[in-house]
Image 1 (cartoon, one colour):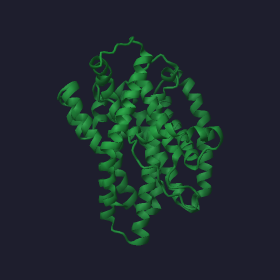
Image 2 (cartoon, one colour):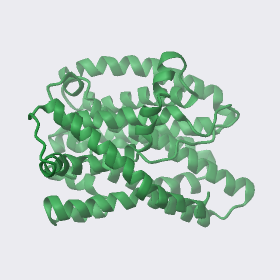
Image 3 (cartoon, one colour):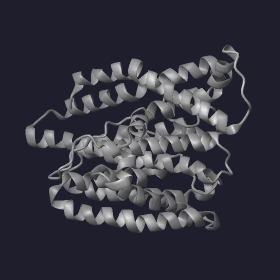
Image 4 (tube, one colour):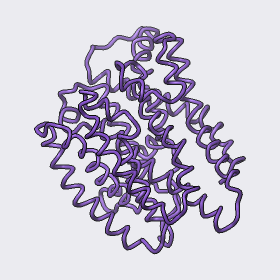
Length: 367
């Protein structure tokens, strides 16, 4: 799951700062949901009914589609309007993605091999960003959250070539087709996997989430479509929101491939409206919450939190407390608190002393 994209895009003729602070808060809410899902009881309402962690992953996909497509459309403008070299921009785009994504990803893989699981064949899939394919046919293990990073890695590999090289007149049609592929894929392959979550691990099953974010970015970027963007946003937020809330409480009663196939598309609709509202800036109490500095700061390091949290859960609490001769009751809430604090601290240190210095190398590859 690509958490670490700069919250910047270039909407045309809309007075909005490049940095969209409330998107970082959405990231924080999403990644905290992942921690709740992995570390708290499954019978908890946030997990059993709301499925906060699973929804957090889907929110990340919409955010990624929105932000990455916005960046790519700006690159396309530089090619078409200012004559910049296409190959050079593509090269710089991939280098910037690699600098942001790969260092801590491979770091945690090596740490996990050394101290947790040892080498096994599954690491071939992790190292090649194909974890999602591996887990679609095999059991979960300590690296299971990496399936989302594989989905986004595969998306980043292909999507820039589509946005930058496809004739502009076909872009909207291709984005719409991309969105439609996913529900059809989930419905058609529902029986093959005999396990709902398994088919959702494949990239084709996630394209409506990534595609809806991309569609929003496309409307932002084209001034002639701002009126259409307003209609899209309102439809997604209100109609998509009502459908989303309805399905949250009824999806367990809706059996079969149709309900399963359409749920993520409805989720994509609502999250697209939510991302648009946050990009423009919620006002009032909601705006104050989404601009609450500690929440925003958690969002800024959300990629590190996501990458490190499984390793933290498997190694840190017991080893840390034993070395300090500390003891505590085996209470799930205490463990959740300790693991969450430890993960945020490690992600913060990682950002300041490891990721940020590497990320600063992007200045040599400006796009």
